[in-house]
Each structure stands twice: as C-alpha cells, then as structure tokens.
Length: 202
Image (tube, rainbow, N blue to C red; front, side):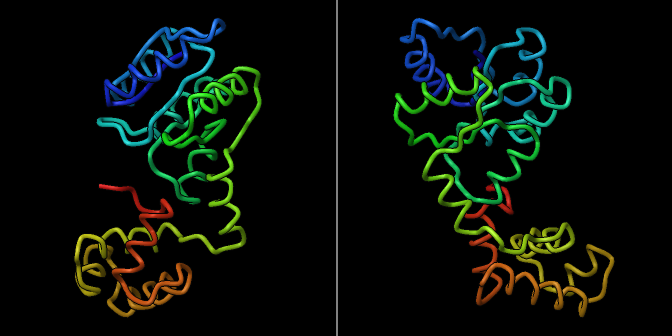
C-alpha cells in the first residue's frame, strides 16, 4: 500500500491503523503528488490512498496520471474536503473510492480491502452529497474560468479583459452561474462553488 499525503502525522496514523491488519502493509509514503506518481511507478502497490490537497502536483492530477498509465490501479481518495463536484471529478479521472478523513479506522480498512478486491465504494456521507445534486447543471469551463477570477476580486470588465470577451458576455455568464448554483450574489456563488468542489480551495 502507498500513502500519499503531505501531513506526516496523517501518514503515521494511517500506517499504524492499516498495519494492525495482518493482510496489509504500507510499502511507501509520498508527501506530494509528484512523489506519489514516482513511487507508484516504482512500487506498484495494491492500493494507493491519495489526499487531494498536496503541493507540487495535487491529488486529482496524481490520480489522473497514475490511472492513465495503469488503468487497473486501485486509487482511493482520502481527504478533508467533501463536495459533489470534487467527488465526481476524482472518480472521472480514475479514483475507485472517495473517503473523508473523518471516517473511522474500521471504515478506512473496509474501503481499502474493497479497493484491493476491485470494488468501488463511496461512503454514505459522500454519497448523500452527490445524490443531493443529481440532475443539477454543472458549470462549463468558461463559467469556471470567470468564477475563478470573481474569487480573486476582479470586476466584470476586468474578467472580460482577462478572458478576451466583452463585459456583457461576462454579465451573461455570471447570471448563468448564479442560476446554476442557486446563489443570490457573486460572493455566495464563490462560497457554494468552493464547498461543492467546482473551485479548488486555496
């Protein structure tokens, strides 16, 4: 098993939890996504636990890279951050399961064992989050590009200049973004987008 998390204490706790099981052994630890990719290529672990927020290369990028090279890789997200869009993005690039760090030791062991057996599991709290937004419209790449600049505090005119479109076009995009997210204003749209995982956390 490979652990990819930038917090040494988290890796230490996971190692302790997992190696109490007779059929589990941690063969490597990565502190960032780039190291996770390199160690996976070297060790080819049965299961890899991947945090999403890591330096250099984030978890989504690491999962995508590993899965593209090794389609059968058992990759499990273990993160602090929920959010239906974040879950769907991780699963789309190759994650087998999505687990929050608030999960019990027993649940982590159960998910790891399932992944080793080729079974996909999304835990109850994460699944509820996804189901709550089934059928909701997703933000387009152009809308996301505009919203990222909104999050930086730019005006519609400045966003239009940055993206090479008119201010009126940005106003239309913002109207669509607010409708899709059910937000009353720009600030709330950013908050909702971060919570659901459309925008990455700083």
